[in-house]
Image (cartoon, rainbow, N blue to C red):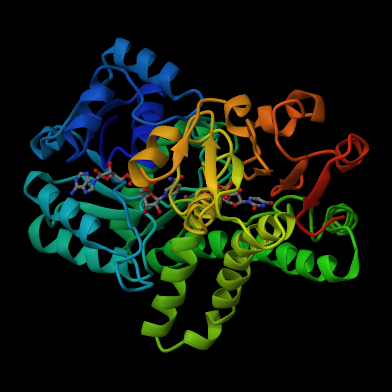
Length: 438
Ligand SMILES: NC(=O)C1=CN([C@@H]2O[C@H](COP(=O)(O)OP(=O)(O)OC[C@H]3O[C@@H](n4cnc5c(N)ncnc54)[C@H](O)[C@@H]3O)[C@@H](O)[C@H]2O)C=CC1
Ligand SMILES: O=C(O)[C@H]1O[C@H](OP(=O)(O)OP(=O)(O)OC[C@H]2O[C@@H](n3ccc(=O)[nH]c3=O)[C@H](O)[C@@H]2O)[C@H](O)[C@@H](O)[C@@H]1O
């Protein structure tokens, strides 16, 4: 199929390359000239395992091209909208200006039989509103909503082999059938592998996406709330999570207590969902998401408090090593990153912060040039009074005291992701603190 992907960020670039890898002819479109230049040269503009390989192979096949011109979408029959929906400045609601602008610039190029497919995460009601615009300007075209569930770090695999597909289609039966037939062709490989498919209305498809993220955020904040109780009782939240996780109704995944969730999606999505509920007169239904958010943000403060505790209340002019800046491992994404937030707060308290990360330093430096970034763990921990592990990259998870004890000024470590072996650190004479476990 001929496909356009409008918006080539973390979601769109992977979607475009993956669709080409699956055999479709794809044009990726973005307003960001530098991003398009990099992609057109076969370079991934961000760190995502597996993306460089499929970008190169798809580009070499001739099936994947990139452009800043919306006119290049004119030949395609399916148009994925994958632009950002960030938190609006000064509000919790989603900023819809990019989605609206993308659709408006696409409308003049739509033909009979085309399908516009929303992928961005949007407030419920958006698809119906955009479908009306499509009907006004290009009545022979249709619109569907096809939310995306990929995780950064696993984005290529999640796109090529998703764990489920959701199509939100028009209430008009003929349009619904035409939209489903086109999407079935786009996703023929996944469907042939028995990927579960839910075909539903627009509102349900939109709500599936934000409900999934709200549930995941709630699960993390649930275990972090229990971590707070563990901290005042001496209990061990990791053992507790293992124990409750054996109950298949609960499950162990997403029960890792620590410095909390961040990224370009969970934080802004729970806020936008709450804001939309308020617009719909149902604010009380999602009021608990404010608590989910508050618990999450308290965990960042907890790490800062632990640093102060280990430094007898005074961070000023003390050297602190921060290991990890990305919001999670295997990503260079620093959007609402708990790790970066903690580094910034410590810097604000006058600590001399040396921060490192395997991939996220350029992004972190661009946003917070006031921080001091170093290339590796050895540089970061040199003369540090406290070492703080905040993103559980593989190389940080495997740290042992012998790796760094000759370098630091004080044997104090905070395990912000509960990934180190407390026994061996304590045995080597370190003051070890974790998040909700002794
Ligand atoms: N990042 C992720 O893992 C996932 C993101 N999502 C959702 O996908 C959407 C996009 O997210 P990201 O890719 O992370 O954002 P991003 O900020 O990395 O990418 C958005 C891209 O859209 C481009 N853009 C903005 N206006 C445009 C226009 N009028 N025409 C063409 N391009 C335009 C921007 O230049 C940027 O490259 C959001 O709604 C997000 O919630 C959904 C699932 C996973
Ligand atoms: O809508 C989106 O953009 C995506 O948001 C999340 O994916 P992602 O943000 O890539 O990362 P996750 O793996 O969900 O992690 C989110 C945050 O939660 C934290 N986390 C995760 C799991 C856990 O047990 N504890 C925990 O603190 C991570 O460190 C990270 O900061 C969802 O998992 C995806 O399904 C969804 O498509």
